Length: 168
Ligand SMILES: [Ca+2]
Image (cartoon, rainbow, N blue to C red; front, side, top):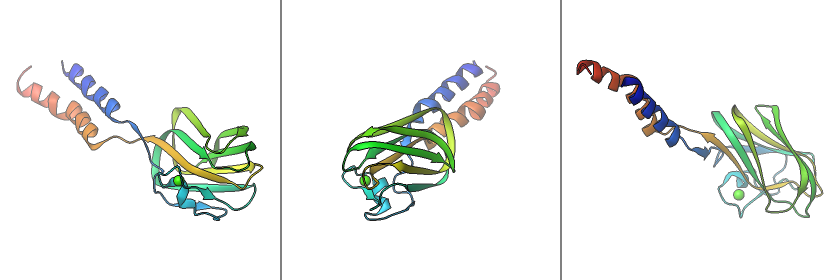
C-alpha cells in the first residue's frame, strides 16, 4: 500500500518534470559581437548573434547553476550555406560535434541519451564558409516543478505517516 502510493507520487514527479530551455535570457559571452551575443538566447528565432568574423569563434552560455541537460538545439544563422564543424562543450569538456552541410534556418539537435550535468555551454565553430552566427541556442534540462517536488515529499514522508496513524 505504502509502496504503491510512493510509486504513484514518484511517477507523478517524473511526468511533471518536463525539460525546459534553461538557456533563455542567461548571461552570454562570445568571441565577437557584430550582433549581440544575447540575441542567441532571447527566445526569438528572428534575431541572431553574429560574431562578425570567420571561424574559429565561440559563444558561451552561463546557466548560473548546474543543470541536468537532456538535449541542445541550435538554429543556424549563416550566410552563405556550406560545410561547417560545430563543437559543444559542457563545462569545458567536448560533448558533441556536428560536422555537416548546414543552411540558414537549420535546426541542429543533440540528444545526449543520458543526462549531463553542466553550468556552462559553449558552442565553438572551427570551420564555416560564413561569419559565425546562431539565431537561437536552446539548452533543455529537467527542472522539477515545485508542485512535483511536493508530490514527491508527500510520497516519501506524509502519506506513510498518515497510514501508520490510521493503522492501515
Ligand atoms: Ca534569437
